[in-house]
Length: 271
Image (cartoon, rainbow, N blue to C red; front, side, top):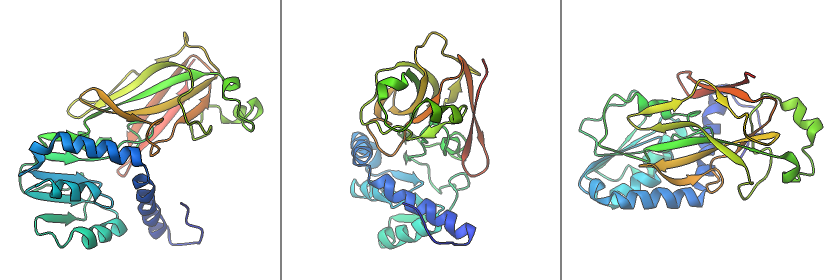
């Protein structure tokens, strides 16, 4: 979804983020995965205090309420999503809709379960930083881990009618989302670039050596995990795109830097 008319920048940015929520909820596999995960932790949710950060349209806050949560905090900083949350959840006495940055929100009680979807397509390139710096400590975080994987494949194997070598050479050092419309994961050699877990934070090497991997094209994809088990990936949940870049070396660096709003990604070839 794209806004086509001119608006003041702040309004445009807030509305653009608001519309992005609609695309997130269109991902049926993601909704099913999160719902199943909440069901697995129904004992912790029932009678407990639940926080959904980045609550969006409040689907999982409402689910926690229906599962018997004693209190639910639906935390959302986007002004338009916050208004929708107030309209949808405001009538429930044990739901508190909070307009706040998740880094600055401090609940009044101990938190039993925290629900989030702060994953970016490159794992740490959206808001997982927030969970590593919360001002309180939830007993359970759903989901609580993830991986960023890089694979090497051959451009010829994708048989794309448009993106040819003369196009790719202009994209050296650029990570491009959805450059190739793949429905199934291509055959590729793979390597884990980074891992994240709640409580353990982000773990990654300063540089990644792919010298032994074969292929002229790199693809980066996310795996959402809980307790070390993969729940969905960029190839099964449409909410996260695969990122592509032409291979121009054997060693690259990828870094993440929090900018106070989202995490920025830096990528470069070293060797």
